[in-house]
Length: 112
Image (tube, rainbow, N blue to C red; front, side):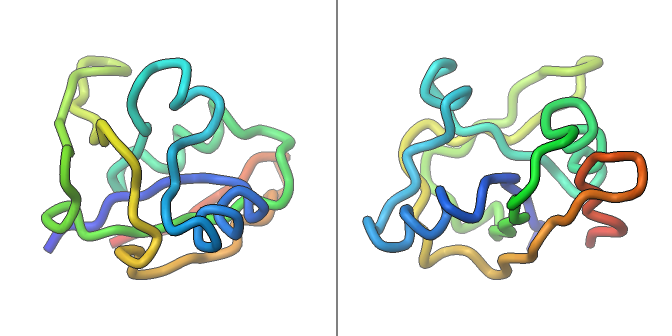
């Protein structure tokens, strides 16, 4: 099973768990789908979009278990996972704190 990842604030993830659904961050709501990343894409996503942002978590999901998942071209023509609809927080297989590294961006490290 392949893992895909969502970088999100701990506050938003806690609220999603309490509500039973994650409807997306501001950019997700604007674009009409929830942005996710593969293991190979997560570090660049963190660097580009979350530099200087504290209080983040990296939420892992089995791609095969997500409804409304589409793989669409984005940065550099790479296929990125997008979910058209809400994410069920109970489908998360791991939630890991994502502190800032010395360069000032969250570094997910080596992902499977």
